[in-house]
Length: 209
Image (cartoon, rainbow, N blue to C red; front, side, top):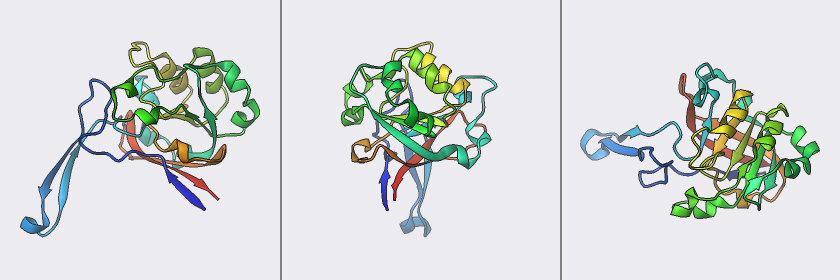
């Protein structure tokens, strides 16, 4: 069995979505002074590797805590992306595999730019037709190794809306996808169980048996 961690480590200097505050990690107790160590954490629900819930976009959408743990696990299928947009034709090449999967993971290679300004620019995104087709496949979610499923300057967040309206969860900022050698694998995504939250940082793992 091989386990691959697809999550970024949360730290104060990590990249964040433009406009979001950087994480703050403050020591509030130390072993030297208090006999124990403790830290106070402050960060966005969309910090680092994270999951978007429908309430991220919709007033009455489900929150992270509304879903059972089964929603965050399942069989995943990996698609390599080389073009600027992910077209419906591209997805149809893998129609059978997608329809047998719980999660579809897109490996764009953009994690290579993590920590650089280019991470926020020109990453591949789904075309609206492709997003709509995916949303109708009865999958649990999709994942990307980029900052967003919409373009960085998008105001409408159309791809978010298409997916989240059908309760297709979105995992953003995946790491280490290059370590995955198989196209099919078990995915475990464990977002922090925050009540009524629109999203949450998550530990995401691949398990190959």
